[in-house]
Length: 219
Image (tube, rainbow, N blue to C red; front, top):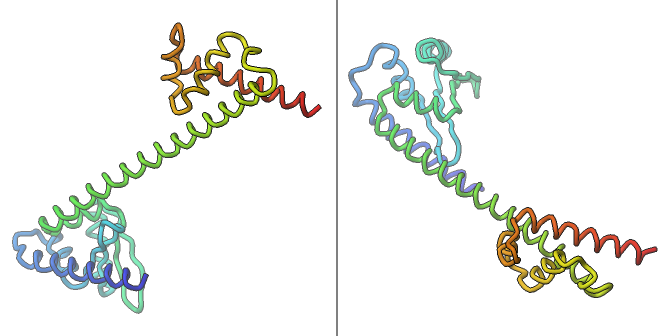
């Protein structure tokens, strides 16, 4: 954790210095934008957006109050202000508002880098969510299939599959023969073909029959 913290701090210092150098070359700004720029040059820091969204200015009391007023009233942003080790810190944690501040100051190169990282981060998060969703669905499907197979095998070992109705027996034998097939694929093998919901309905009936047989055996 210590090594990661140092690496993160190094990134913040390096990136913030790059932004300051870019801002020092920006000349044509109105009074309010120039004040925001000067505040960042004096005591601004931006965190690595790949990890978290955080931009802050460390300022004197009067400058901090003026910065909050400008960002709020002139640009419609929502900065927060706190005291830290005897100094005043004005900070923003919303990604969209950090992008707005970079735009306000004229840090166009930094803005492009920031937005590029945000896009990459969003894509990674979307991929992770889809992978997790698909994994959860797969686990659910596998669990259901194992339960169905267990029920069918129990019926087979007790009363025999021929004790089932023809439609249920057909589905039961296909499920045992093709353990890895989806319900839709099993339905396509039936004569005539049956929908996924139809196959699921039949398998639920089979599971209930197995439960009834177990209850009777318990009695």
